[in-house]
Structures are given as structure tokens and as C-alpha cells.
Length: 249
Length: 251
Image (tube, rainbow over the protein chains, first blue to last red):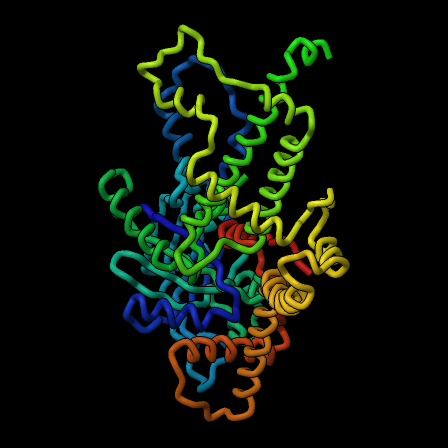
């Protein structure tokens, strides 16, 4: 899957106003979105890569090449994402154990170079149906780095997804064995990463196939139309490509 | 020096005159263009107008000085246009006629006459005084009898002009600041009202929007953990989101 995206920043004072504007534009009530993101860093393959050997004319054997390709795809940060509700935070209220929400694995590539008007990147999402996602990730050669809570509201206008959210820091887990099932502190007690409390507006369009030119063109046009419509409300900009760099070094 | 010596003085004087007239006509054209392009019920900004007028004034003065100097006067008196045999008379007859004309055009005569009459009355700068308006004013006080405008009239004029000009200048120089202050006061008033009577009144849509803003601002004020701070750089936030890299600590 391909994602076309733009980012904007909204100071906390204006968040409510911007939310009203977005609700007006999209003609829908804001949908509350709370997600828990676990960032995993690849460990296998990093040491094996070594310095690049340049200038060789040698044709690499087919097997080695596929290995390299497999390695290269694995050298990005990957996230485990869990959709949550407000009731999932804080200690259990009525004694009943909280239902574990399903996890999914999300991957986003480095945005493509040379696109000026909007950013576009390759993404992929895999739903995890069962088992222990953390051990699965460990088995794939990834290790846990950090996690955060994405707290915000989602709007949909035609093909455009508008996600007004802020990033909240989660304290490091005390018990690494119960990483995924640990009790989350109450949402109010958590502090946002940006101390000013500003929200991000993530405007995106998902394409089923990024290699189809007409699809890419249509998506770009629609996203730019949204950018133009929101001009004066939120400045949607192309983020610095390297700030969305998910490659591990 | 050698080059200026080589050129006959008559040519030199003509060239100076030509330059002065050219500059003047260029600037007059520019001023006229400026006036015609601005909307009908509006004038160009005062600063532009002042610059244009002072520029034109300087150039007119320079032209007048050139024409006044004895040498040039003498030289110009001697000058006669005489077309060379090679001049294409048939093609450029009109230009030739204009060149050979010794008398001024009817319009020009009218202007000169008008100017002369006005000049006789006011007698501005007649005695070699070429100074600012203030000096003229002083002169008017000294020898008001010979002026078209009596001392009384001049005083009246200045009494009207000084406050009027002052008002305009204040708008130009301090206008924005005053507006901003007023806006700030308005906002304060509004928030003050909101705090006083929380019931609120039915107001226009804009007001509702502002209420939202002020409500959020109030919320921000109430929560001590999030004081008003500059926003973190977008890149830093995104970097944390992508790879968990700690954003730089902002104080």
C-alpha cells in the first residue's frame, strides 16, 4: 500500500477551533482514536551488512542477492499498534479483566525522494490474529525500543484521512516480560511529547497501488485540494523526508 | 577636463537642459501613472506622494537654476535651429515645424501667463530664497503686504493645515500600532465579559469561534502542566514517532 501524506501543526489553544472547522468541512463528528504504538528496532542483519563494496562488476549469485534484498527490507523500524479506548487506561474499575484489543504490525518506508508537492511512502499493515506479538517480533529479530500513545480524532473527507492527534509518552515498562499486557496509567496523568501540547494534523490518502500513475496523480490532486481548502486554518506542509526516516543504522 | 573643453559650451548647456527636462518628464509621467492606476476614490499612500512631490520639486528647482544662469540665458538667446540640407523635410515636416517655431504654443502661453500672475502675487523664492516652506512662511510674516495671500490668510491656512496634516501623519506612522492596541483591548474586554456572565449571549458566528478560542485558552491557563510554550519542531516529533529517537529538550 502507498500513502500520500502532509503534516500540519496546531497549537493547543486552537485545537478545538480546528476540530470544529474539520467537522464542518468533512460533515462528520470526530471519531476518537487512541492507539498504542510500540516501536521495534531491527537487530538481526545490522552487523552483517558491513561497509558497501563499490565499483565491482561482479554479478552476484542469485541467492546472495535475494538474501540482501530480504535484509534490506528488514532494516527498518516496525511498530506494533493496538487500538484502544479510554476505558483501557487506568486501574480496572469493576474488577473484571480488560479485554485485550487486537494488535497489528505497521511498517512505513522512508518517503520517496524528489517529491516536492506532497510526501509519499510505502506502507504495509498486517493484522495479528493471535499469539504473542512481542515474542513474534523478537523471533523476527526485532527488539523493543520505546512506545507512545497516539491520542486524537479522525475525520474522513472523500479519500482523505485527517487525523488530528498528539503524541503522548508512556513511561518505560518495569517488567519487560509483561510488555504488552501491562496496566496502562490513566490517560490524564500522561504527558505529551511536545510540552506545548500542540497537536499534529496528519492528512493522508492511501493508494492500493503506488505504481499506477493515474492513481498517484488523482491522490496527489485530492490531497493538494485539501491542503488548499485548509489554507489559513492549518498549514499543511511536506515534512522533512529524513524526519520520517525509519531505517535503522 | 579635456573632454568638457572639447565640447562647445552651447552644446554642453543644451545637453544639461535636455537631461533636466528628461528627468522631469520621466518623473511626471511616473507620478501621473501612479495617480491613474490607483482606484478612483483613493490616493496613493502618503509616503509615496511626499517622495514624489519632493523629487519633482528638486528637479524643477534644478531646471530653474539652469535656465536662470546668465551664461545659459545668453547662449540660449543666440541659438537658432537651422536644418541641414540632408534633413528629410517631407518625412519629418512636423518635427521641423516645431523646431523652427519661435513663439510658444497657445497652451504654453496660457500656462506661462497663469504662472506669472500667481508668482507675482506670492513672490515665492523671488529674492533668491530657496528654502523650505517654513522660510517662506517667515517671509510672509515679514513682508506680507506684497503677497497675494495676506498674513491673515496664511495664518488661517496654517492653522487648518497643521492639525490636519498632523492627523494624517499620525495615521500613517502610528496607525497600525493603535489598531493592534485597540484589538488587544477588545479581546481583553471580551474575555472579561465571558468571565463575568458565563451565561453568554447569542452572538454571531465569529463570536462563537472566538469563544471557542478563549475557552481553550482558559483551559490552557487552568492546567498548570501545559503552560503556553512554543510548539516543538514538527521534524522532532515525527522523528520520535518514526524511530523513538528522543526529541531535543526544549526549555
